[in-house]
Length: 110
Ligand SMILES: [Zn+2]
Image 1: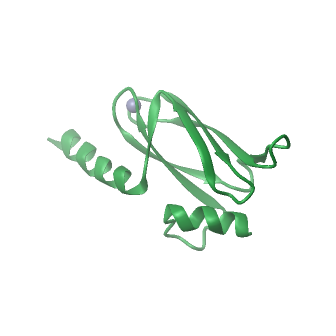
Image 2 (image 1 turned 30 degrees about the horizontal axis):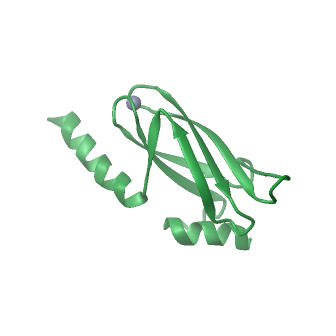
């Protein structure tokens, strides 16, 4: 479980009862909508036997324009993110996501 705790320590997950969740925050490269994605660390993260690290490949669908984004995140053996890439979008921090979400919703309502 130390692998999971290290991930959550850095990402600021708020719900400690959801111990198998890792949240990714991205912005759609097409319409600019911020998207939060829950990753199930038990099912979604795979072991990379070549490096001893772990990796995640995730298809993310934006709920605004329904574009599919493809995220890939690599972790080292300690669960630290060492590399992340995404097609058709950009990664956000949790704080950037919350700021972007407010701005996006304000724009849609006006
Ligand atoms: Zn979009």
